Length: 428
Ligand SMILES: Cc1cc2nc3c(=O)[nH]c(=O)nc-3n(C[C@H](O)[C@H](O)[C@H](O)COP(=O)(O)OP(=O)(O)OC[C@H]3O[C@@H](n4cnc5c(N)ncnc54)[C@H](O)[C@@H]3O)c2cc1C
Image (tube, rainbow, N blue to C red; front, side, top):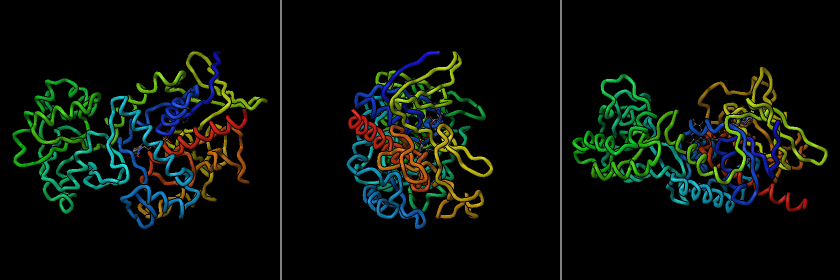
């Protein structure tokens, strides 16, 4: 049995846990992080801030900061409403700088949401996109004549379906189906294999040779987001040069290469900043000593590992992440057994219509917090002096419908780390 000591233990390695680790390490805290980063690998790679509010009206906002103001007015308990806009901006700036340094640049208009096409041919509101997708945002805005290319054997990406569904919004779309270089007559080609193949210059040249004769007046080319597992910006720049018109990526369904790039960029960029990282491990119990310090037990093949730290930041997500679990009657928080804000009975978890614009009450279930991001009791009091929570585990939000997944994760991580620092300063 091995014990380590640090200032703050972050439980969770999804977007909230990774962002919290970055913010804490950048402020000089020694951090231990536990969790699996695999959820990030499923994500589209887009960063939403806040796109839709109120949900029932489905109102889309061009200005995410104005949307946040309206949200704070209408839903004061929403976790995104707990962060001053200045902190929200600082959090995004810090994250984007970090990713750029880690070789994964993102693009945005700082004060404007943008629209991006999805593999279903719908249009999604988001805030930042990987740099490799940005040309597609501009092309949609300007309705430029565009060629969308699909690959034989790549499942879940149909250029024809996209063009059909987008024909009113983007009339100049043409499509082409081509074999992926080197895939021969294979029935199925996998995104990871394609992304790996395109790391090699020779495969980029072969791909450009297949696309170039099809241009016929198109001013840009959209391809599924498989353009390099690493160095995607270089792959897109090279293809742009070889084909002669701007090339952009279109998000795909999971498993997502932009999600894997994000996971890899976090792992690489945080390596030097985070002294202790227990990847693919789970916290199995947490106890608090008399002095208030937490003792965090982790399952490990080599026996039990223990972390001692004065603070814990809970970023364990919802049902997929494992932070919340539901039995036949109730929803519970899985590590501390914290109270979970939820409907009175299971019968109220879902509305009858799956597409009901009000969303389902179960999606707003979660842990409630005070102004310092500390989980609270039913009486509204913090349950632990130094336990903080961030990300999708928090109550009173529906990130998927409100299009605020990354905004929620990143801003609450920032708020929780800031609160830990303020309380630690006060205690000393
Ligand atoms: C399919 C998909 C599409 C997405 N698309 C978008 C999008 O278009 N735009 C956008 O902004 N965001 C998108 N997201 C990302 C989404 O914003 C984030 O996943 C969401 O904000 C939740 O992040 P989180 O860190 O709170 O939770 P999660 O990502 O669920 O992470 C929870 C973490 O907690 C860990 N954990 C749980 N229990 C334990 C335990 N006992 N011990 C140790 N670790 C534990 C898990 O291993 C995991 O690392 C998408 C996500 C998915 C899955």
